[in-house]
Length: 193
Image (tube, rainbow, N blue to C red; front, side, top):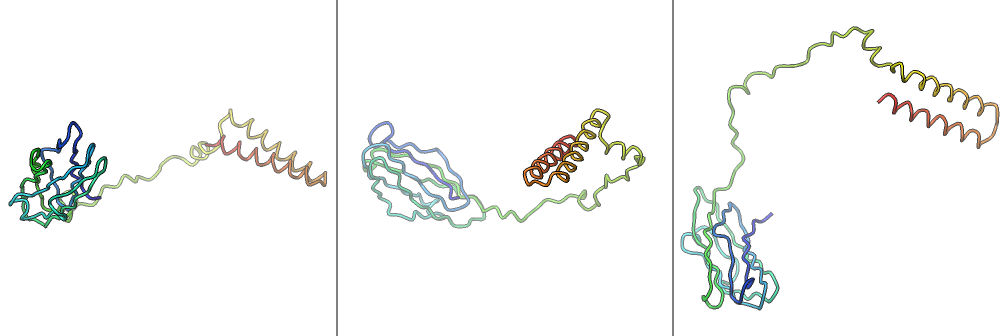
C-alpha cells in the first residue's frame, strides 16, 4: 500500500492549507490534496535537498475541483542514508503555504537477522515418556459414575430401536429408528467431550 501524505485544503477558509509538520518514507508516496471548499490552484514544490531523491510526478501547479481529492504521486530514489528536505504546498498564488519536512529513509532490506549463541545449541526437549499406569489411563478414558446410567440408557434405546425396526417392516419405522440412533450418538459425543 502506498504511503499517503494527506493535505487538507479550504477546511477553515478559502486557500487554507493544513498538513503534517513532518513525513517519513522509504518508498514512493502520494500527496492527497483533499479540498473541502471552492476549487483552488495548488502549487507543490520540493526544495533542492528533497528533489535530489524525490520527483513530483505531476505538473507543479495543480487545479483541485471543489469538494474533491486529487492525488499527486511522488517517486522516491533508493538512498543509503536518510535524506531530509521540505515539500511546500501553496494556494492562492503563494498567499497561503505550508511546508512539510520529508525524510526519505533507506529501504529496509529485511535480510539481516541477529543471531546469538543460544541458537547454536539444540532445543531441549520436554518430551518425557508418559509413566502413567495403563489402568489409570483406561479409567480416565471411560465415563464417570454419573455418565454410566446415561450411557446404558442410550445403548438400551439403540437396542430397542433396532429391534422395533427389525420387527416392523415399514420405512417410517426405520426412519424413526435412525433418528433415535442418531440422537443417542450425538448425546454420547457430547457426554464424552
